[in-house]
Amino acid sequence: MTRQLRARALSSKFEPLTAVPDDPARSRLGVVRFAGTSFNPVLRAGYPELTVFLADDESGFAEIWTSSRGVESGEHKAITYAHDGEYLFCAGRIPPCDEHTYAARLAFRAALEIAGKLGYHHVFRMWNYLQDLNPRMYREFLLGQAEAFAKRPVTWSGLPAAAVVGSPGGGIVFHLLACRTGTPVTIITPNGARGVYLHGRLFFTAPSLDDAEELMSAANLARWGVDDGFGLHDITSLKVYARQPGDLSLARFECDTRLDREASVAFLLATLLQEDNVLEFEGVVG
Image 1: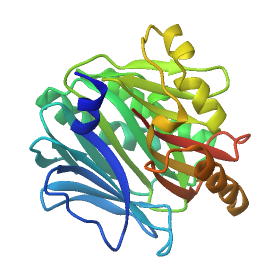
Image 2: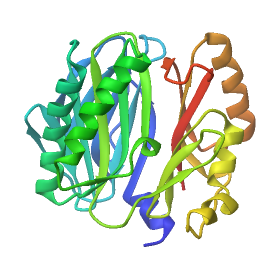
Image 3: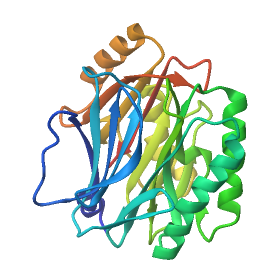
Image 4: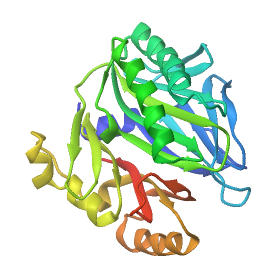
């Protein structure tokens, strides 16, 4: 399927929390609300809705994942999900606890059980928002996550396909995307940018727009056996995480001057796993 058809099949955009419009031509696969608190995922009008504690009333927004196909949804062991025959969206939350390995193992086993049961065997993108993120906590969480994947009939491209961000509260919230067909290809660069290429699109994380540009270039993708290439103007949606308000202001200016005007962009203050990074960019290209 061409890149354009894939883009129509699965897409994401950002909308204000107070006004999340319906699109009669598309079905909602999942909604992630960035607000001043966290809630367990719920089914809302036939789609999963997850709330992440990473914004306030003024800066909050909703990330809306939609499909051009009909969507079916459900719940399984506190995991909410929706799928359209090609893509699966799953969302979960782990309340604050001290046993991060055990809790992550249980939560991801539940998510992967439903993914395997429904036939979505390729997990190609994950987002993890961890309260009070630090290296030790993340190692414990990652161990439980890896143990869950080791026991289930799904594949995973690992850390390069996962975003990890610290939040001020709410425990651990996560959501993931899996597909039924295609083989995800992990893409990495020495500068720390990483991503996964699937169905003519690149889902990426990078410490700067320059690093993202290098990651998505035709020259770099060719090193990983991918015959494709992108520029910053091909970014369709982008979240920018910053440690400090001043860094966020600089990122806004850079995005305004370097990205296509049609790109959907959102900005958040957050704790970053890599101590040397003041910014992190994660989004979708193609």
